[in-house]
Length: 235
Image (cartoon, rainbow, N blue to C red; front, side, top):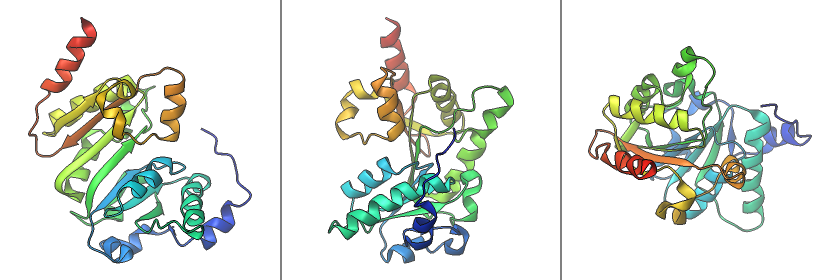
């Protein structure tokens, strides 16, 4: 997807203290950056920041990091938070890191992350060999496992059924447990607490179902919940 250039982006990158260009410098120091001991939750591919900004608002006792590689995209979320703070709102639990998340161990120590959000990640659908690029491929899941602490949670949403089914198989094959699975998020009981992303609003407006899951390691819940949902859809 082509990213439209913003005339104000360069200045925002230079002056907005919420944007970190070199995450490796702060590896192991993210709680120090936030100046507290609250858990650190990370969204990989935060886009314009709609999800991570609202989630940070709702959870002031959790630190959030939005990862995004595109400069013309990451500035949008950071600008939104800066302007909110300048207008009297207090969002001091969110920062943005410009980074390509193919190797998170470059910027995070083992056990430094409390939760990972994967919202509408690239499904890499065209070639079979591209499956390894999917952020829920088992190679990525192994790297996440080392970086996550506590209940080791990953929350995922997508509009792509192929990616969703692929992810279910990868999580279960690698020993992750699954819960709160939905094949149509906006028409489920999970919708009440859902924070909508920019892509999600667009896809949902077109009548497309949104798929969602929560994964944790090691495996406690089984795949029975997903099988129950699929059985209902096939009746």
